[in-house]
Image (cartoon, rainbow, N blue to C red; front, side):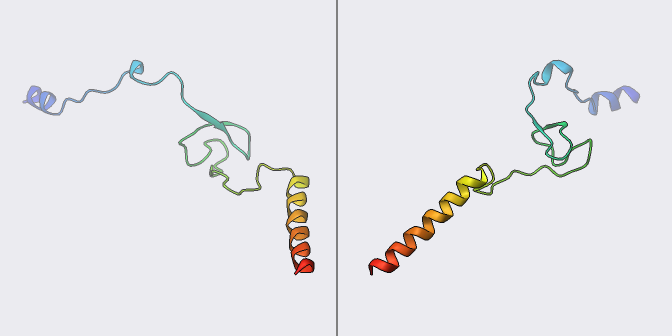
Length: 82
């Protein structure tokens, strides 16, 4: 009876050769540890890993300030020319 159970419920477990050698990692913004890209949280510090989608996140402050000043200057020129 034991042989029937083993043959019926036998599963093929993946061996190490089935896994990718290269897995993508990112750096945790909180502690700097390498974290798998698909991980929802850092295994070291527990901080949730999120994708920063803010449009100004990668720009320096002077670049954002220059853009805001440009928009304000354009609005003022349009007001005074009307």
